[in-house]
Image (cartoon, rainbow over all chains, first blue to last red; front, side, top):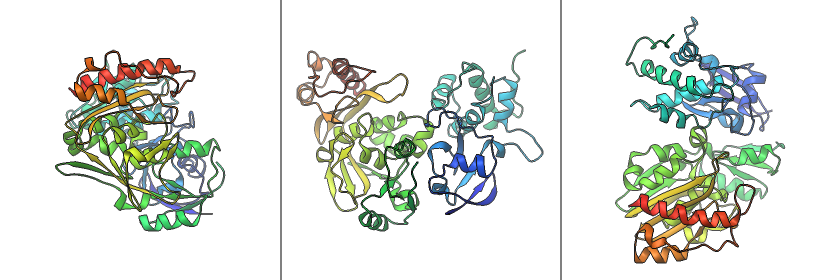
Amino acid sequence: MPKVSLTVNGKPVSVEVENRTLLVEMLREQLRLTGTHVGCDTSQCGACVVHVNGASVKSCTILAVQCEGAEVLTIEGLAAPDGTLHPMQEAFREYHALQCGFCTPGMVMSAIDLVQRNPQGLSDREIREGLEGNLCRCTGYHNIVRAIAAAQVVMHGKAKELPRAAE
Amino acid sequence: MYEFAYHRPASVAEAAKLLAADPEAKLISGGMSLIPVLKQRLARPSALIDLGAIPDLVGISVTATTVTVKGRTTHAAVAASAEVRQAIPALAELASHIGDAQVRNRGTIGGSIAHHDPTADYPAAVLALGATVNTSRRSIAADDFFTGLFATALEPDEIVTAVDFPIPEKAAYVKFPNPASRYAMVGVFVAKGPMGVRVAVTGAGANGVFRHAAMEEALAKSWSPEALEGITTPAEHLNTDIHASREYRAHLIGVMAKRAVAKAG
């Protein structure tokens, strides 16, 4: 079987895969990184979003062999080794930006890419447009947008602490 | 997906050689259309030849007259390019509304035009701007490139290497996205420039993207939304499906074209 060598969450790995193995299958079934979810399996819902070489992609629509030499970041790779959450994860918790949680890993990965690409800051409308590729069937998106708006302030270094959600 | 062999050539020449040697092989660029097709087992290529490791195929360059986008350049890169925004804002704007952010991070211009999906956005820009498609063996004028539904003038072993867009005086693209899939039910790209006045319609044609001669004639006389008043589109060669009848699409072409001219200013 072909072997693909890449970096996942900072660690070099080498995995035997079929040519037709999807990145998400390799992550979940071979590396047991089950934080990345498969929702629709048709590149619509965004539950499977991970970063490949710094760009958010739908891991259900990329072959593992296409990731030879790539740096892949999944939801498991966001928190610091001591357990400190990434500001986006912290914001999702603080703003209650999830209900069932199924879409959350993909939402968080897409949101981080969105914020990183827009250092000028995003309006609520731009955040909503930026999330076009991520579907949430529980929340109605309101708290997700609030969380991302709060997280961008910390991610861009404009505040040290996450603005707290109103009681 | 059915099984397939996988090649990752380092140059266009090597890719072309692999492709010529295996008539059942397919090129894969971003894979945003091809991988879904493979997952549904609608195609069974013997091999995929991945263009992803060919650095020569990525990049944007702009001269006084032309914007050149290399074949494997992503939609995200075109959308974010300050140079493209300056030279042909309509092209950057079109790229910024293809699919969603994750699709734009993978999908490429070469893949989009070689696939010639009847609802794709890029073919409208290529045709309306009178672009030239450069391949591994020749240059093809936009008017000769799109030959039918999912069909192009590309030979089986030919690879899109770059697209040259002449910089227009004015141009704009407006689409009516399907509310669920966000694909263009009708998209109209209008341009006025070195290639004359050109109007290209995507999403609507049963044979893919097409030029709208009556609108071009009217806009050449007077570049204004009002000039399009009363111009109709025959419906018989338009798509009809559960989302829109061909008559509705014919109507939308007029509406989108007027909005596009207004947007182009």
